[in-house]
Image 1: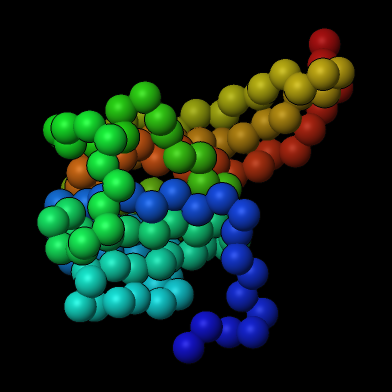
Image 2 (image 1 turned 60 degrees about the vertical axis):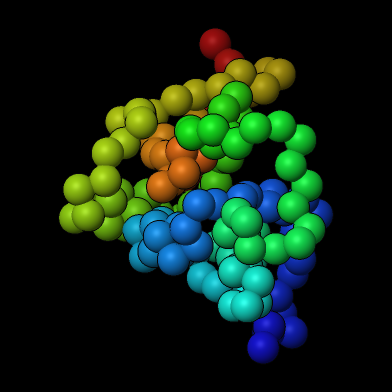
Length: 145
């Protein structure tokens, strides 16, 4: 049962995955997401982490897949999903313990946003199907130079 305090995000990507169990292991055990609810018979799970939400559905198990083209690995080419996390070290530790490779090592980056810069500490990692996740921890803002 979903908590009354649960807030539905306005934009939630639904990712087709090749193996829901492998994806749940990655997203939940390594990254830190929690299953809000699932439909086991449909091989579907709705996940959340501090306001970030994503749906996972195993390919070939449902009757309502909206596939617009051939699905070849890695999936999700051309997009990365930025996920704001309060602590970057926890998922990094879990990924390292699992021997999971990072797509891009941890960096501190400041992005221009008008007359200020917004700072993040971030890294990129691919899930079992190749979807690219950019985990990002806010560092604050500063005036642009």
